[in-house]
Length: 228
Image 1: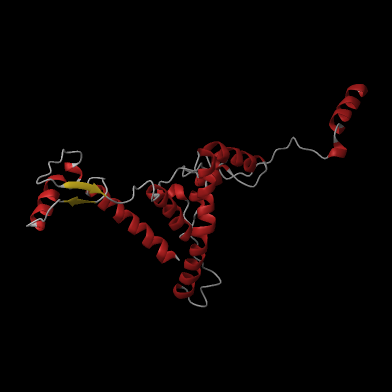
Image 2: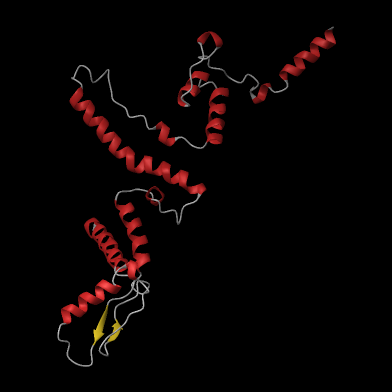
């Protein structure tokens, strides 16, 4: 099936190239009322004068009562453009590549291109990445090294969202104590902050409290004020 899809795409391209090389006009026949003494000479003379895109739309001069009759099917009738578009998507499906990565943006938008790119990493690249990681670990490490060392391709850069989404995610991670400033800066390819300046600190938002303790601080403060 894959072979036929690619073969059809090649055949369509070759057809289009030949079609436009011949002046984007259907092939035709020259009719003569009598007998042509040298048909090869007539054919070569006609092709030399009118064949090709450079000779398109020239006025033809027919001799000896000859008549030109075009034959063939227009590319619109043969769905030439539609076939080319379909084959792009067909081949993209075979290799699990989003059409927008092959410059087919007909059904793409700014809102769905990012999601398609993430799916490409998840469903197309990841299966191969896992195979490469496992194969490299198997052949590069000895049995004693395998429990300690491993090979991992970092595809996080391909999975990064837009700037606003990343900053929002980093803010949540920072405020909830599971990422430090240097963890975030490393993901953004920024220089690390010195530990003396708090670059490796994990912080947590201390304003959160349990539901049953809500208002407890205010009550304590009120008692202190009353006693004073």
